Length: 465
Image (cartoon, rainbow, N blue to C red; front, side, top):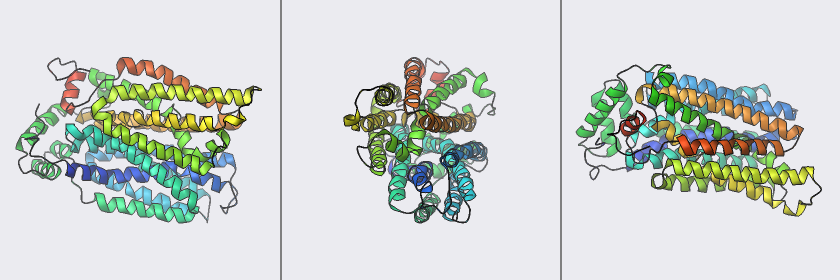
């Protein structure tokens, strides 16, 4: 089905501007997600005015994912009530409140717990709504690039918070993070609403105006007609939760995305991110922990950028397979090293750089697929009438996985050693590789409607899964 009036007449730069403005929310959520990496060591030191034990600090770390769950539910309700744009704008509110409470936590350490929970609401909302907005405002030819940018901007937020948090005090850094949220809200407030949403609400003139802005083209009648037909078909049955498992195409998409979300979290990426500086302190003395954590984030940003640039060339499925297989190998490599170091008499002190190398290689592998293509698939595999429900369900699983793996890592690393978490995460990736090889579909260069028809087994749809 033709997706635009004339590809030679439309321009893509307005779509880049709209998506990048929205992704500033993800940048700020990256700050929240990675805030614990440079900050927890300071909270455990004399820099913080209250005494906090390592166990108490672990709950400061994991309470954020509880807020994620609330954010997932709220945003999945609001996204179809007030629209994609205004739901995204509201993300800035808990971001501002969270960092303001961190700034004032000199009065009570309890403010840190509340701040982390509130910040988690914005984080969960980002994972629910941003993939939908990105896919709905983008043309198929650049949807992969823009969708994968979701993960890239998240990494930039993680890198930013590691650098700022390492060189500024807890409270001065909070003011910088507040400024970032204000910039996001100012920039995105002038961006257009998703034409998909406007068509869903039968606001065809506004949808036409939105398309004209996004395509920088006056003649969008054919694309508007095509989108209207696609949305009408997808909305012909009101989206209900049971549709996620009662309809064959949706059930397959849910199964695939649940496994991919589990693989994301049980790679260990969340504890590695939240405990980056403490992890490097335990794993290697090759370089200072602050530099090791920032180096890992910097390399992750370059790897994710590479993924963004090649996702529409190589395809989603090959990149996910490379990613999962690479994570399995690198996690196993590090687990073997820690076994030799902690449980044998083999002298490995002169090889202290190896865990750093292993973690950097893991970061590269994760970024190439699990950290980029999976988030893109979330916006591609579901029809309009159940997208919000699917995003809510899958991101709640993501948040529970984040909470589980982060606490699992902290308990095992503190009680035993790094061997157990690395070995368990490696085993999950091995099993996941087999699943991905057999069941993950390819969506490269396909319209959202073509993807739906192929999931339904329509042989007339272009391409094949």
